[in-house]
Length: 117
Image 1: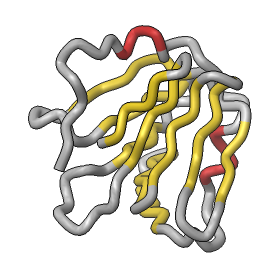
Image 2: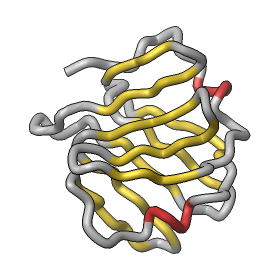
Image 3: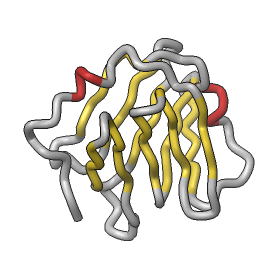
């Protein structure tokens, strides 16, 4: 299990807008702009209006598309630096969950740099 590098500054993501949510058989991606993409090869936990939805890969019908057009207001890491939560302007949040030992991975592609967790 990999962890987020201590030196990674999540402030660079704050203010980004989710432009699209894309799906493949093996992944779910949040595209913020052409040089910022977060991809999960396991699951994403989406919480909106107090309702938590676990979106597993491969994804079926889900509510992740409701975050398209929303701006990131903050990013939070859990204590062991394996799970990343994105807080959005509408009060919802999305968690890239790395706590479960059965997860595959997720990655951030940002400004030509790939971070695999």
